[in-house]
Structures are given as structure tokens and as C-alpha cells.
Amino acid sequence: MTFRIGYLVFPDITQLDLTGPQQVLARVPGAEQLLIWKTREPVRSESGLMLIPDITYADCPPLDMICVPGGPGMNALLTDADTIAFLRRMAPKAKYVTAVCTGSLVLGAAGLLKGKRAATHWAAMEFLSSFGATAIDERVVVDGNVITGGGVTAGIDFGLKVAAEVAGEQMAKAIQLMVEYDPDPPFDNGHPRSADPAVLAMLRERMQPMQTQRAAQVEAAAAKLR
Amino acid sequence: MTFRIGYLVFPDITQLDLTGPQQVLARVPGAEQLLIWKTREPVRSESGLMLIPDITYADCPPLDMICVPGGPGMNALLTDADTIAFLRRMAPKAKYVTAVCTGSLVLGAAGLLKGKRAATHWAAMEFLSSFGATAIDERVVVDGNVITGGGVTAGIDFGLKVAAEVAGEQMAKAIQLMVEYDPDPPFDNGHPRSADPAVLAMLRERMQPMQTQRAAQVEAAAAKLR
Image 1 (cartoon, chains in turn brown, purple):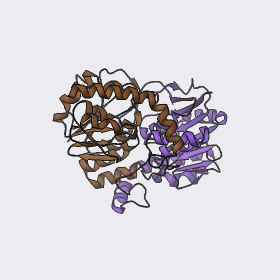
Image 2 (image 1 turned 135 degrees about the horizontal axis):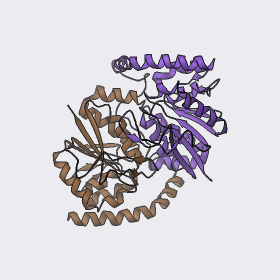
Image 3 (image 1 turned 135 degrees about the vertical axis):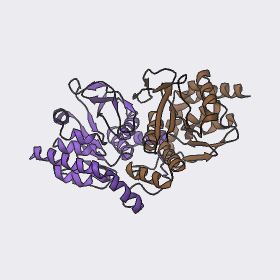
Image 4 (image 1 turned 45 degrees about the horizontal axis):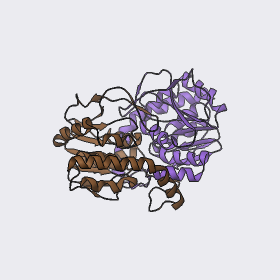
């Protein structure tokens, strides 16, 4: 039996939002994983890594699971009619509707998070309520068939949680052991709650232009849902 | 100032060995990251994700840092004359000689780990001594200018450690916060020391054919070094 997973890809995606879950879920029995975009031309991720779409929105077959990764390029997707229409068309047929990092906001813009609990990147938490969702500060949030992960590296925790849902705990544990997910960060600086205040302040300042653009895009997308 | 990082890519690479560090190190000031292989045709990773080499062995400029990721396809590299010659040619000019996961064995086969302490995937630890290296069961091992990471997801810890070396602790902490590396694995099954014994036994059995092939390749590569 095939378990077909489709990931949106787009210019300025944060590639680890996608490559974390893609690595973990590759070992789920029957997994077939597709990268989906408007065209099949390679797209450049935020970090410079090129990703090759497997299929277009127009040609995409039904998906058992849809996953929207995040990244700076996500801002443009919030008001992108093709992307929103694609998600609205695919989601009702999917067994799982999912996102990692700021990809959650795109699910929100498609109206798929109304009344749902959801995770996202810490810097995007404030925007979830605009889409009728409740922001939850956890690595992975499961609300019915909607599964969302926190920022970037949370995609690995997300992938393992999905693997357990789809293929059982023993399989998820085997995958965790294969990818040696026994993390030991060299610093305790992975979340605002523990971060060095000076580092957090510096990042918030540097992210301000992107956040301002994001706020405007969220507002525009939310207005369309009303 | 440019800090040029080159990652080997090859068929059946474990993409997360590469994409973890690539994401983390993209934010090091001046970072220029290249994927290197024999040709510029896209290569298929173990999980199916396609990777596009930026440059060939023949055309690669000097690197500040060379990094060899691992994966099942690494077995073939151990006795691949082009790859071994490339590493031997590039390493003396590089500021850092590095590997993640089973990529460490390829450094070993190139004679670059003699007398060094090194990390690798838990299932490959037994092979490091064949190359004159001492296997260390840690996420990241720094021995002079040789920096090696453990299995797959250890590439993220590795990337942060390298970022701290290259750009200082504050920068590494900022990157950690950006990628929200505040891990919370859903299971405590990421290393043989904590793994469910049944899961470990199942994996060891499933990996046996690859391990047998690996042992033969290690032996052939080590014989060339003697």
C-alpha cells in the first residue's frame, strides 16, 4: 500500500523544514514522497540548496498527507491564489493535513486551521490567531487530522510523531535510531524561553522587516477568509 | 570575506547528513556552500530527494572547509579512486576537514583520520580503527582541524559546533534560535544505549547485508593505506 506524501516547495523555502520530515518519513512502509510546485523548474531555498519539484499543482494526484514547510518565501504564498486553491482542493481528500514551521500560516490562509490548535515557529506564533487557530508552544501539535510542527528542526520531532501515527511506535522508534536522533545541542539557546536575551533581541531586530511584511500578508490573507 | 564550504554529494547519500549542516552554516557570515560530485547531473539521495551538484571534482576551487556526508552510497566511495584523490588533494589546503555520519569512513579511507579521534554513525563505529582512528561515541568530535559528527541528525549539533568555531558562540546561538533547535524527541530511542532492545535487534538484522558489504569495502580501502 502506498502512503503518498506531498510537500509544497517554493522559492526561499527553509529547506530543513522539508528535508527533516522527508528523511524521517522515507522509511514509513509504502511512503512515496513528492515535492510540489507550480512548475518543475528547480527552486532555490533560503540557504541556497536547490530543490527539484516532482510534480505541479495541476498534475498532482490525491495525497494521503499534505505538508507545507515554511521559510521566508512563505510570506508570498499567504496571498497566492494558486497555492491557496491547491490546498483547498487537496485537503478534504487527504488523511493528514500538516505543516512545519511557518508553513502553518499557509494552512491558516487556506482556512484549514479554523478552531484548531497549531504549532509554528516561535517568531510566528502571534499570527495564528488571525486565522482562527490557537497557537500552542510545543514541538508538535496533533488536533484531529491536522498535525503541525514548530520551527525548522521541529520537523524531525514532527516526522517521528507522524511516523508513529501512520506506522506505529516500533517503526517510529526504529527510524529514530537509524537517524541517531539523540540530540545534544552545544548550547541551550533553541527557544526564546531559554535564549540569551541579547541574542534574542538581536534576532528580533534583524527579523523586523520580514515580520512587518508578514503581518501585512497575514492581514490580507485573513481578510479574504472573512 | 568568503568562507567556502564544499560538501560531497553522491548517489544514495543520506540527505539529512548534508541538509542539516547546510541549513545551519548558511548563516555563517561569508558562507558560500557548494555541492560537489563527479558530474553536475542531479543525484538521487537514499530517501529519494534529488540533489544538484554545483561543481565537479575537476573544477572545484580551494575550500575553507570540506565535509563528507554519509549514507548507504558511501560504501562505494571507500574504494573510489576519484573521490579519494579529490579528498587528498583538497584536504591539505582546507582549514577544516570534516564529515558527518558514515562520511567519516571516507575521510578514513583517504588517510585523513590517522591518529585522530572521530565520531560516526553508531553502526559504523567499529570500522574507524581500520583507518587508524579512535572512535568516540559523541555527537561531535573536534580533533585539531578535523571535526566529525555522529549519525544523521548529529549533523545539526555538528553544524552549530562548526558555526561557533568559525563565527563565535553568539552567532552559533543566534542560528540555534533561528532554527528553533530545542529538541524534544517523542521517544528516547535515538542511540543504542537507550534504545528498545527489540528495535535495536531488528535494525541490526536488517542492516546486516549493508554492514557486510561495508566491512569488505573498509578492508579493501584500509589495505590500500598500508
